[in-house]
Amino acid sequence: MGKTVWQPAVAVSALIWRAGKEVLFLHRVQPPRIWVPPGGRVEAGETPISALQREIREETGLEDVAILAPCIVEAGLHDSQDILFIDYVCAYRAGEVRLDPAEHDGFQWLDMAQLEAAEVHISLAAGGELLYHYRWHKEELILSHSPEQLRFSRRLLQCLAE
Image 1 (cartoon, rainbow, N blue to C red):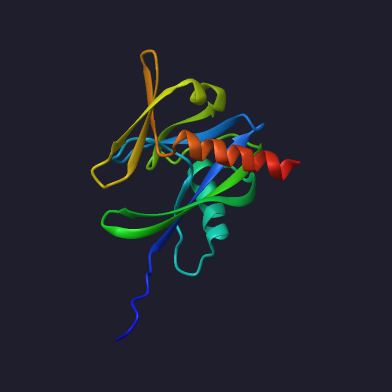
Image 2: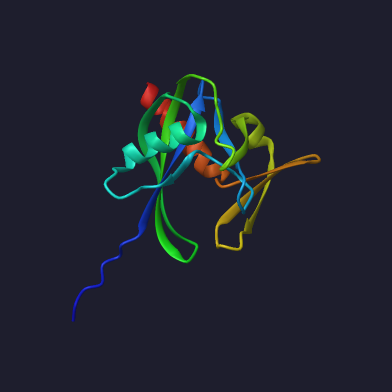
């Protein structure tokens, strides 16, 4: 009997930290219309790092971002396809964010202290993605990442800087 080999698509994303306090999230144009870090699928012939560099440039226009280390690796489903998600902790150095309006209609540098103060609820998108609802008083942001994931990536950033 032959062995079945798991062959998922690979997607990468950049948790880009500015001054170790704020992380960059982009607002998606396509459903689910949530806040996500820059990223996308690794294309044929690309390494995860080269795909991440391309995605950062295409989605944000930023050229001066240090890709430091992988920090979160998860397996999941997206549009009924197996995907291996790899998040990298990154450090912003310079530049202005310029969005591709076909993909994103807004961006925010989210302050970790504000995210830590939020009440967080989890829901499931139609495609099976986990969504994290961060709520403060009457404001709500729906992010692709949990508080634990963001804390972990920030702590790794701090360790790498030591």
